[in-house]
Amino acid sequence: MEEFLSEMSEEEIEFSCKSLARIISRSKRLVVLTGAGISVSAGIPDFRSRNGMWKRYEPKVYASYENFVNKPEMFWKMCNELRNCTEGKKPTKAHFALRKLEEIGKLEEIITQNVDNLHQLAGSRKVIELHGTGKICQCIKCGYQGNADVVLPKGLIPWIDIPRCPKCGGLIKLDVVLFGEQLEKEKFEKAFEVASSSDVFLVIGSSLEVMPANALPRKAKMNSATVAYINKTTTRFDNYADYVIRGESDYLIPKIVEYVIEFMELGCGEKVIDTLSFPIQFIQNPMETITQVVATIVTWIGPKVQEEEVQNCLVDSSEIIEVVTTKKQYTKTTEEKEEENNAADKIMNEIKNSIKKRENDNN
Image 1 (tube, one colour):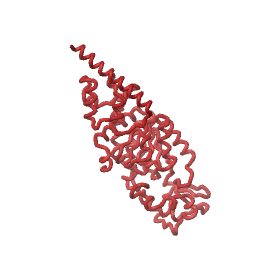
Image 2 (cartoon, helix red, strand yellow):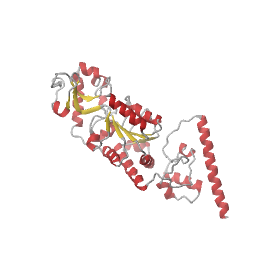
Image 3 (cartoon, one colour):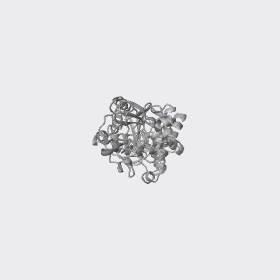
Image 4 (cartoon, helix red, strand yellow):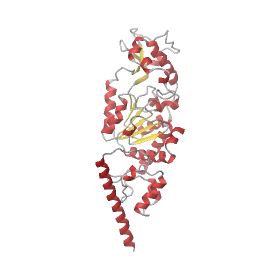
């Protein structure tokens, strides 16, 4: 909690969550990509943080397919710790919140990089396990598959008890994708298909360091989806996102889902204030607080718009710009900036003329 509060104020978090929730409430094809960060609060370590697995186990040594074939005891040493960490763990608040989105018909698919089975334990049905699952083991020789809890012995000693296939004696590995190993074609193609057709693509708890998962939000963006990242730390792809919200997924995801349900019940997909237009300059130079937002809007269009109306709704249509108070920097060409500035000036002049006309009519 402390980490995201230092980067975003409570008001910014609240407003960003509401803005994103409102978009999701109107979404037809929401797709979510989850990484290790969503499971940390369940007691399962992530891989790339300060205390992550890769700090103790060099991935190219312990988690490469080539090394597994030549030195399987290295792989099983790491896997033993991972299995012990995941055994008996329960889904987090964020996992259950995503299940709720599926229940209310707002979630097209979850694509997960995790192998911990927590999405399924939470009750989610639409899950693509991009990197496999730790619940199944398979023989690399004959292809035999079995339940890992049944096939693999408890208290495995990696240097002595290297798991072997009960059918052919070949090496057994968990059904997880190792470095240097190809993803399952069917899962890979389905993940890209749902990402390409999404209208909102939400990334939760992923550092986006691993291909091809890190290509999915970019693919969605190329097809005009709204892209949002919810993570404790920055990623190399933050500039691709329309929303970046820093913080704990257990805090943010349930909050966003609550707002989604609220907006759906209120029917907030409808335009509430027909006469109100926001200059594009407004979101390029956002206000610090909601109070400033309200004060600025009321100044522009006069007292007929009440503060409560502005706080309780975000207005959008093809001509109306959604208000976002995050400090996102937009990179635009000179021509785009000039065009938008001209459009903003035109809107401002129309507002001023409307106010002036009303004042003259009153006189």
